[in-house]
Image (cartoon, rainbow, N blue to C red; front, top):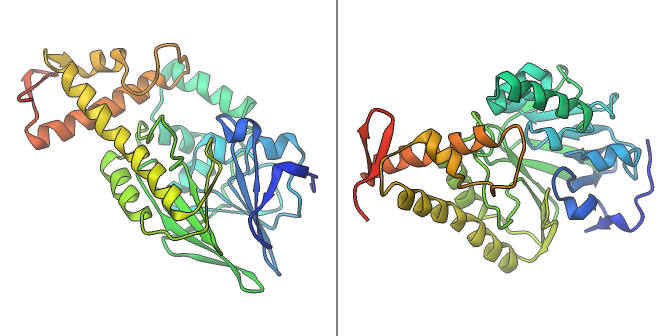
Length: 303
């Protein structure tokens, strides 16, 4: 299971490499992080590309998952002899298909369709033997090489980033124009924003996202991208407030779409739109920006 990645292995230091996925890690691919210590080597978020290319450029002793989403755990079964680690809050999604589907909150035909996708495209393999970790847990790989977990919830309950040497792995704080994703049952808008504030304190030479941006060099570039990423939440909120100039239901908001473009057709889109709209409406109600004017129908109160 040792594969030659050639130019697609981007070495950031003597111990840390990025295994760059197709389309710079654009979904469904991703950018995995390989960390080599004197005693052990770990692979963070083994992507579908790692599986399709037949492994990593070194033997893998342990897999670390940043969270339990299908694209980040594709190689869990491929590295069957390696230990698997994930934040304790996300263990159910690693352990069983039922646990993974609970993370998304899908049911009915949408669940059945996505289950098949997770099996066929993302090679989902339950790992009930996976180990849980907590915020601040340090994986000691030997020779002074460590990986420290940083809990950054909101995307999922257990979503985590990782410090190793002069590198910080951001996972799905991916700094894209799409913005933060908090559309699952196990997502939380308030926690995501708290994580975006928390991660500002990370000082590294390189920041790595699992999708799209890949390697970001330097703190100033990171903060600029982080500010733009965070601002998407405010833009969505304002767009939803504009839409609530007239009374609307959550289902109407989901059908209108504030997260995905109209042409996007995936089993989970309706669920994500509904869940995201619900969280923004709850925020509006707390702030006094909107009111429930009829059962299940909301309208902005001021502008």
